Amino acid sequence: MSAAHADDMDVNVTDARGQLPELLDTQVRDGGTVFLTRYGRRVGALVPADVAERLAELEDAYWSQRAAAVLEKAEPTVSWDEALALLEAGDTSE
Image (cartoon, rainbow, N blue to C red; front, side):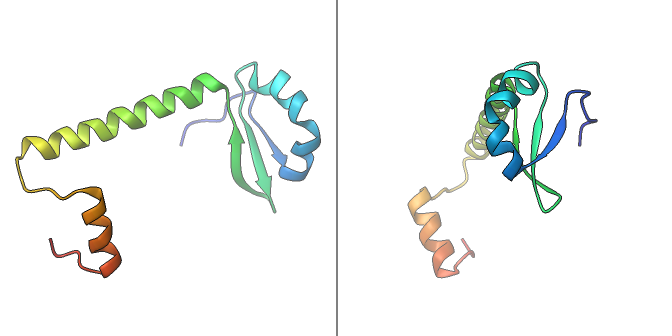
């Protein structure tokens, strides 16, 4: 887990509902993260759009790399629909 940024803050979900415009215009716009809490536990976060976009790019790159590695092995594969059917049937032997 990364170290907390000076602009990071925790806000209860109920309080955040009434403060959303202010949180976006100050904390998030300035690069901070607003962690949304419920019963004292972090359940979500408001982050700058560029952070969320970068995370999506990293995730796409990761899964592309994983798929390329599988295809390089030239092992048999199944379609997503077939894999889902096997999982739902409890048959994970393939």
